[in-house]
Length: 102
Image (cartoon, rainbow, N blue to C red; front, side, top):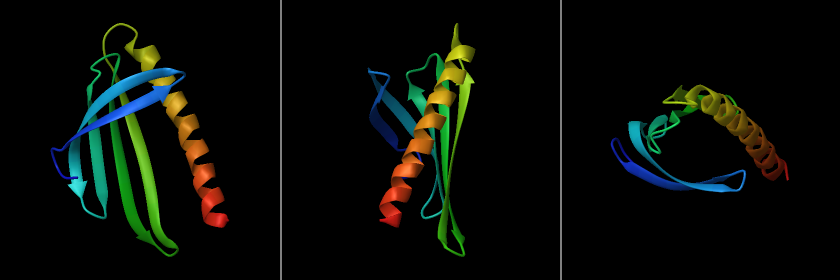
C-alpha cells in the first residue's frame, strides 16, 4: 500500500457484483489512508478515509465515506449507497465486537 496505488475490488450488494478500482490518495502508515473511486465513474464517486489514532484503550479506528453524485440519477444513487454502506458498517462493527468479546 502507498500513495497512488491502484486498488481493485469486487463488491457484491443486493445480489449485484461490481468491479471497482480506486486510487490511494493519502497514506500515512499507522495513521491514515484515503481512497477515491476511479471506476465505475457513475452514478457516484466514492471517497473513503480510514484513521487510526492512539487512545487509552489502544487504537481508535474511524472510517468515513463521502459520495459525490455524477450524471442522471446520481443524487438518488448517492443517498442509496450511503444508506446501504451505513447499514453494512453497523453489521461489521457488531461482528467485530462479537469476535473481540468472545
